[in-house]
Length: 145
Image (cartoon, rainbow, N blue to C red; front, side):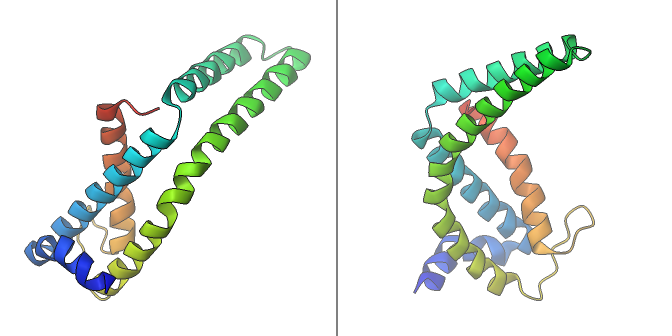
């Protein structure tokens, strides 16, 4: 049932070229995950945490010879990381099932198909690299923290 839906959504792109199809799928999935992340997380809080982490790292460089201050800063850093991770967990849960289902379909479609991307022929490795590049670009465009 879902195979026919995915075929209707992405089959045309894969028919053009396996690499083009993989790129289209990577773009759409990355956009989907980023939008869910942006909607579900408190972007203001995430931006503040990111800035605080940056400030803590800067402070750690200044106090690298002071073990007590480093321990204090490290504790702060861990607390901020935990807060950031807690906020990232909900969008991960929301997107996990759809991604697993789509990856099952991708595995069957690309089984035995060679995708030539930067000397990489494995579709999964090519997907990972393409989606990482797209994720950086989409996050910058949408200003997601």
